[in-house]
Amino acid sequence: MRFMPIRNKPSILAQKSSRLTKKTLRWLIVLSTIPLFGFVTAFGIAPHSPSLHEVEIKEVVRDLYLPEVLPELDASSEQSFWRQETIRRGDTIAAILDRLDVDQHDKRDFLLAARDSRAMRQLQPGKIIYAQTTADGSLLTLRYFFGNEELFLMEKTEQTFRMSEQKIELESQIQMKSGTVNSSLFAATDNAGIPNSIAAQMIDILASEIDFHRDLRRGDRFTVVYETLIDSSGEAAKTGKVIAVEFTNQRKTYQAIYFQSSNGDFGYYTPEGESLRKAFLKAPLDFSRISSGFSNARFHPVLKKWRAHKGIDYAAPTGTPVKATANGKVTFAGTQRGYGKLIIIKHDDQYETAYGHLSGFAKRLSNGARVSQGDVIGYVGMTGMATGPHLHYELRVNGVQRDPSKIALPTATPIAKKDLVAFQNQAESLLSRLDIMRNLQLASND
Image (cartoon, rainbow, N blue to C red; front, side, top):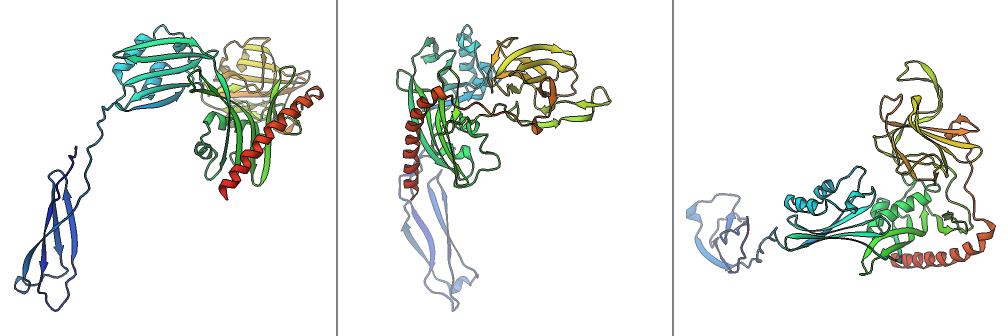
């Protein structure tokens, strides 16, 4: 229903008694407005019902000023909104347009115009598509940064879509933000205007020092220095990496500095130059549960007999990304008996990891390929002897499977002596920035 503005000053017709019984009458005035017709009525309600002969009735007319009722916004107005959608594994551009609530007519025209687009065939999980739409779902603009800093741009001109794909020059700008945890870390980073991708990096960088699931407390503080990549028009194209972060958890402060060494290796270090990255990740999956632990006697669900289980099984949906737990070289990527699709990575002369029952391998992964800790190497499946989707993970020491939870794993290498001076100079500058932001935050809280 659409309401029209009421511009008159309507009058109220009320009842009022001039002569009452001995008992005082209390009046409750109830106003009822009907904006559609512009009428206003008032009713006097008494707790008792005296005889009409005892009450003298008079008409009283008073003005009642009502605020104007503004008309509703037209849903087909030209007001537009920018929205974004993260690309999921197996996504299609049609599915993304549906999540962006693009109307079916524009969706059909867009798919027709972009049918030969290289960018639309390179939808990379984790990247973001930005779309400008009207309230009724008309698609005005769509942007997607793909490949090596290339921009796919689709703009509506009258009733047609104009498409372009071009290489862009991105300029790095440094952002500094601070926040305080009141409910959750992501709520705090949202309040501070920090992108979710940066918040996720903060968690990853400090995961060996802070359990972000159990250790966070109200009042914990953080400061982060990170990159934002700007295009030629001055608009933020995407977020880059965290350069420095400070997190005070339960009154203990942790700091991390990004540094790339002279041989090309990079990572996050304490101000003293110690690596914050353990040599091996605690698990090869981000979110999962252990469905079967390391054991010398387990009833095998397929073979139906007791046998040793020399690894850890992580239950997860098919397609869940599997990460390399340490830097190394792929020595096997193929199918092997009960393991199904299997990847084996050699880390050094002593350590080796294996990842079994995979549904598939990451693109460009092959025997001899070098991988870094945290790289996606494959995807959870149920190939080989498996009754459900899960990852079978093994840590092998000198060729023998060992329980990762009960073995002391090596720590990552600290800053090399030849890079120590360069690191100290970089760390000094970044620590000064962290100090400035921390002091500003504390001053604002006082």
